[in-house]
Image (cartoon, rainbow, N blue to C red; front, side, top):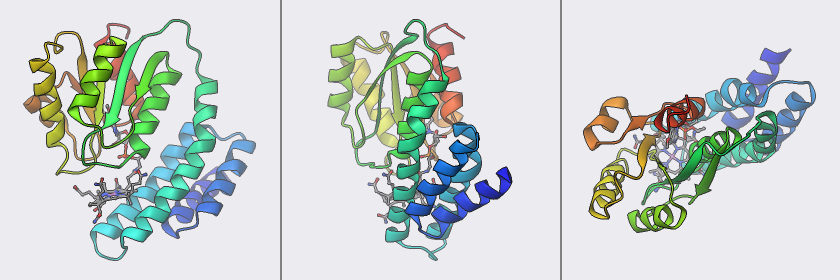
Length: 216
Ligand code: B1M
């Protein structure tokens, strides 16, 4: 039964049916399926298939947009549920997070932001297409001790390096630990650009962020 609903969720994104994605998410929650399982086993495989079909030339930009719409509708429902399942006692740290300049992919970054906030971090989410100046201004304003940067394109990953350089120039590098992520980002890329850590997914990001501030 649960596997069945995961398959239907995956298909709703692949078939470009955002209303079905929303309805199935409601159904899954109502029958007690954990929100993170809905994301990992139902929705993310759908986005991966859509991305693959796009790369192979079978799907076009509108197909990506429709799939993203379905995922976002589902996430609007899931995010409060994810928060409600975690208990935070004291702030684990202050995080400024955003998707780098030139990049408008927001779903993964928002999921990471939600999971960090659900796990006790105070999170300032700057959204997408964030310039190095905006990252720096927000870090100064909030006294953040973690900067999280997401990049989904090989052409925008390089912005992560630019922001780290700008942090150095602004004398802020010692104040903030830098975590990077996003589909094309790897551990070796993180090392190459002088980031403090990299995470593959949202739960990994929570674990790494806790380690970075000495709370793991
Ligand atoms: Co875009 N897109 N897209 N897209 N898109 C990809 C990324 C792509 C891989 C598809 C493909 O060709 N297979 C490809 C990139 C190729 C490359 O550079 N290697 C691509 C392309 C080419 C493009 C355009 C250039 C297409 C065009 O215009 N011709 C264009 C670029 C626009 C721009 O940014 N300037 C574009 C546009 C779009 C849409 C706007 C239509 C839409 C985004 C809508 C939105 O976000 N509101 C979109 C989508 C939906 C995708 C795919 C299909 C799905 C992305 C997604 O939401 N995944 C994607 C293919 C794919 O990734 N399979 C693709 C679900 C999400 C939960 O996962 O974002 O990976 P993800 O986040 C994960 C981890 O990466 C990690 O944790 C998250 C949760 O587990 N993570 C972090 C993310 N950030 C992190 C930060 C951390 C730690 C972990 O620490 C700070």
